[in-house]
Length: 284
Figure 1: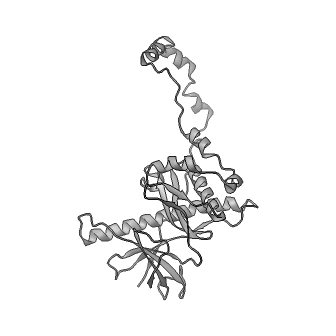
Figure 2: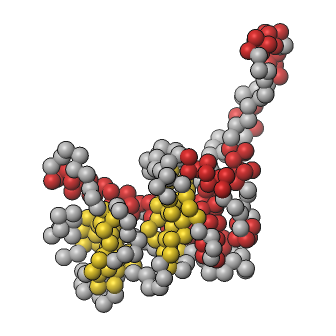
Figure 3: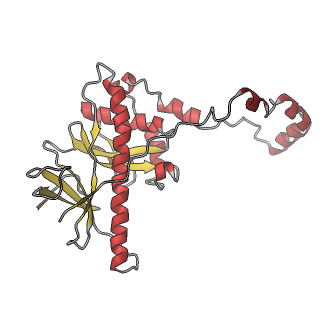
């Protein structure tokens, strides 16, 4: 096993390892795989058992994030394959949870090794802003994937970090706007969503997928407020003399009418698919 520079950073230690035994059927003997461990892990005033629990929670979360992105990408790629001019579609690599009992930090992620030139298609700078590299066809497809997922989740989820080799994507990072979306906590700088909407430029692949402009989407998601006078006194006078509350109630539709005309449960939104619980691969 040797250290690798693939998908590493200040928060991870990365190794390229050759599979001997114990990882079948996910990885066959003789193949190479990539192992990533979080480094460092804060003790947070707890003992060694607390450190191991923290290690497990972090790795579970990383598996959940990338495998959730993989499930979204499957739907995206299915739509892309139906478009003749789209070309090769993207694939997010699955990651697995590995248990290494002889290691002081026993839990890590393991994934397939990628051969070729490793690229960073979308990164987050130290200020928390997205730097999208769209100089290549794959970079533009990654930008379209970001747009597609942002629209699919109604602006609640954004793939902020995308790296990989050609169309094989890994080391996925996300920003989450709403607490509890797909079971994830709020992640990333909240301003990254506003920045993405203002700076994203729809490309050829966004057009092929018939994605709405993010400016239009933002106006649909943002509730409009009626324009009022700048004078609070004038607003109070208009509110007092314009119409009575009784008039407002007469003008409004009956709240019982929808219950009579629409069957119960008609407007229940379809729940999105949640990534499966990460599989555990044990190395002896």
